[in-house]
Amino acid sequence: MPDPRITSPELLNVLTTAADAHSTANAILDLTHPPPPTPSTPQDTTTTDTLSTLHKTLIAQLAQLRGQQRTALLSIRTTRAETASSRREIDGLHLQLQNLVYEQRHLASEIASCEGFEHRYMTLPLVSEKEFFEEFPECKGAGEHEVMTRRIEDELSKRQTLEEERIALVKKKEGLVKLNKARREELAKLDAELERWTNGQVNVRRLFEVHEGSNKMTGRG
Image 1 (cartoon, rainbow, N blue to C red):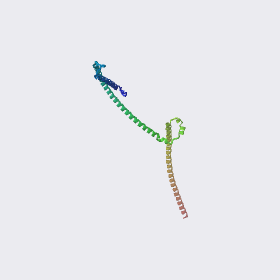
Image 2: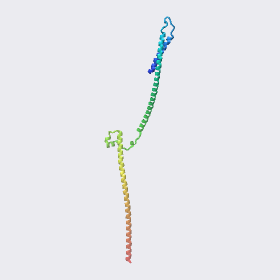
Image 3: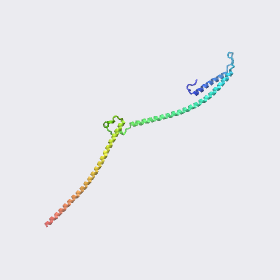
């Protein structure tokens, strides 16, 4: 009985034909070496014809066995090639699986790092959600990401407005500084003019005093 582990039809055919040839060869041996005749078993006169038939059968079986053996060898080579190809494919898939596992672990690590990362928006001095929803009630049904985006955009808009106001105030301050400087320069000029005018008054008064003194001295003489 063939080995149950053998499932190849080609090998099964070889084994079946080999078993048949083995049986035929044993039959030929039995006929060529018969036991000595006895009164109860006289010599068979058909031995020659039977041997001829069995010989022809054995030759045919051996020829069939050689053909089946060639077919089986070709099948084995094909199976080995297919097995090698399948092994290479499995090795390639195994390598791909290892790469995917590595990539999965890497991505999981990156995701964990991203989830644990303290993003700058988390430290922004945003208005509270309550105040935000009071100002923008249409955002109450939105998702967390959209709400945070809108809050950041709102904060940015308010900061831009404050920055514009700051720039306007800076420009206004610069204008006032220039105006004050110009007025101080005008006041300095006026002070200089007043000082010159005052000095002129003193000189004129002195001239009058000198003139009056001269007149008095002339009258006495």
